Image (spheres, helix red, strand yellow):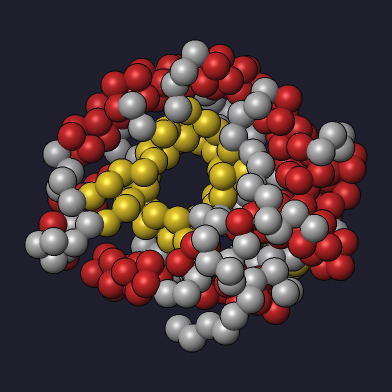
Length: 284
């Protein structure tokens, strides 16, 4: 580990450059990811997240001896997703597969069962994106049961988007974090975590969760805090309390929360430097 990126933050931010709102072209994203992997802050950065439908376009972008660690996002049905993974270039190391199991309001169990079967055949980490609506707790129970049986599966939740209902309240997100803690179930997050501290976007009017808020809230939850205390940390807009909690655990392994994808690496890194949680200077 770098002395500039503490153990607590290792692999926190997956590189989601090709996804909105950044929407980088695939060649630019691959080039930039190689630069991130060579940077002093490389320990902060997880794999390059790519839609499954883009995998056939990657071979021509890789040098003969190059390798690339990727996370594959299921933008195709499970059957086609499995085929895309089987046909992927051998220079790709697929660290994880992430796919939604249902739309909001739908029963997540059928899609979850399909994804669990895929995990059985793949043998790699699979994240099931579960809507924070109908059937949530039952889906978490099913994931926890599969994980207890030896399958490398975990949960994924959406924390933002293009509509207000896609942003869970602090209490809703706290309840999910505590539910995962109670089931010993790791989780990832996606969307909306643009900055370290909870804030309101002046253009959309949406209030976004802060990723350091989530980090502090997860530390508190795994330390025994219940929903109200976890929600208080998620709702905090003064950085002092959440930053101090994170700083006090700098050299510990991050519990429960695997991390999140960001279309920008520089934005979270800059926030972490400004808050004193990462040592160093950053140049894009």
